[in-house]
Image 1 (cartoon, rainbow, N blue to C red):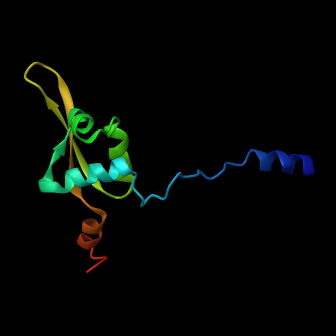
Image 2: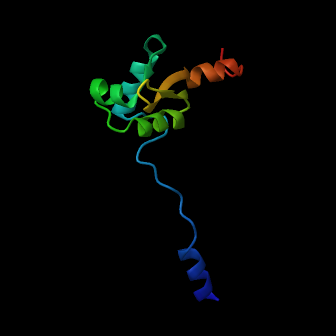
Image 3: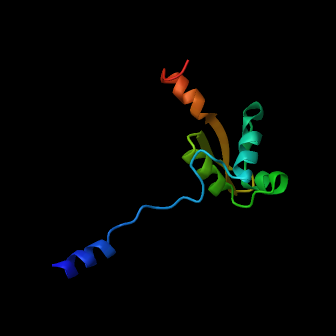
Length: 104
C-alpha cells in the first residue's frame, strides 16, 4: 500500500511556476504598452521590431493580455497581396473594473 501511495505522490501534477507575477510586465511589454497607450496607436511586427526593438510581438501581446489588457488584433491585406496583423489597445484592467462598477 505504501508503494502505491509513493507512485501516486510522484505522478501528481505540480503547480506551474511563474518567472514573475502576472501583474509585473517585462521591460519590453511595458515599452509596448507605453507605445499603444499614446493616441490609440496600432502596432505591427515591423514597427515593433524597427522602432521598439521587440522581436516577438505576439509574445508581448500575450503578456499584456494575461495582465488584463484587452487588445484587438486585425488582419490586414497589402496592395501587393501580403497580409499582416495590426494590434490596438482596447481597454486597460482599470477601465474594465470601472465599467463593471468595481471601482469608483
